[in-house]
Image (cartoon, rainbow, N blue to C red):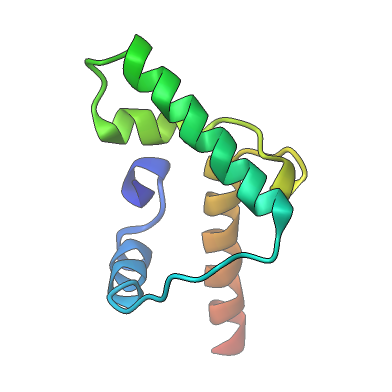
Length: 95
């Protein structure tokens, strides 16, 4: 998914490695919960109307949808921006 968005390969590998350990917990943000429910509904509709799409294609489609929790930006653009910002901060800290 990240590579499909254009995130550099070394960042994709680092993110994958960081995701080896995870914790599932309850959110305190109703906005995040609402967005997750919206995505679940959109995915259900997408799977029904576009059954030939791959899961990656569905993910990329959902990532284009505006999300209230990020000020109606799209998750795909927010993700790319977050990785670019992190990369820039790491580069600046090495100087």
